[in-house]
Length: 258
Length: 267
Image 1 (tube, each protein chain N blue to C red):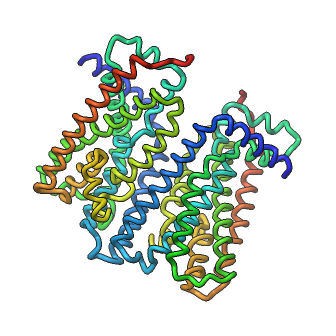
Image 2: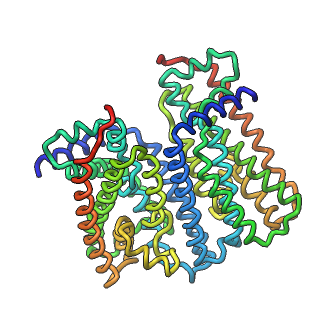
């Protein structure tokens, strides 16, 4: 943990050397995600509801997904650039050091620029909370917290899953991008909007519904089953699964030279 | 003219070389379109009266956008020019005895067409074969189809002319990434890439429809399905031509200025 903090402070210092370009980048990222929010609010100026969900419900859903994704990208950027590290042989350097590989990988590539989308997520969360008629009690606040942290873990596992492919083929795969970016983009609507088939896929293959749809039902008071609020915990199993896959890949790793 | 044609052809051919392995990219395009169709279907079922387009017109819009994504994609495809500006390779470009603006313009269009020919055909084929509500219909009549082609060309011109403006503005800043991202966010919203422009509520909509961004994908894709027709359509086409001329004029003027002032930092 101490080492991770050291990594982060080193990265902070190096980004602050190029302040202007960093801030432009953050503003740019902010605007890209913020325009999505504007599009959403335009859309719902015409419609009052989608399958029984109101504008504020959608905003909450949107901000939870955006926030999870932004935090996960911030922490897990190392996994996303992993294929280029393998290609350049940088990963061998990491393997030589007597510290956890994942810790080094994540620490080296901590990505501060993601505070742009994070800002959008926070703004939409505030608007969503103020517009909604939810009676906020501790249970609901904790549910919201579970959703966000569960979502972050889920996206991190998917990034790790994508990185693991690099052990088996040196080409990077766009497959996991569909899953992660797609979920961020389309996860703004509760998943049952998309119909039964997508629901099944998002429950049994990639457990999106566990962090989005089910806890959201509890959050919005559409169900009294408080067990739904605990569903995000099950993402830990998915994470372990992906970690196992990563370990398997690591054992198969052959350097392709620098 | 011949030299610009050869720049176009060179870029077209090199574009075709690299794009064979984009099967996964196609899956992405396709899934993206499908998810969007499903989401709008839910909206449509929730409130038919508030839906500003025919559902089938919307489905066509989404599939066309997915198919011709690379043709109208602003600023995220052409990394060459950005890299050239950052690493100083631009100095070679300036040495060539032809106009920088026309050279980049033709090269840019070539690159886009190459990617689009490869990507659009499979997406179009699949979307024509989709089951009923999600099927891409044929254009409503021959007239609409011809106008669709014409406005596609105009729209492509406007898109590239706008991108050229951004490239040239990068001459004046050292960090093009930031500028590029700011522009991407704005264009995505204003061109109707995030949601089709008819979904935008009224006071904003009439302003946005006058901007050059509305002349990019908005016009051809809506003409295709007959959503845009009559005098409204004629206005839109005239506006497209107007923006094309204006953007090219502004672009080449600034470009001439920038060429004189450009400071190459290393390379």
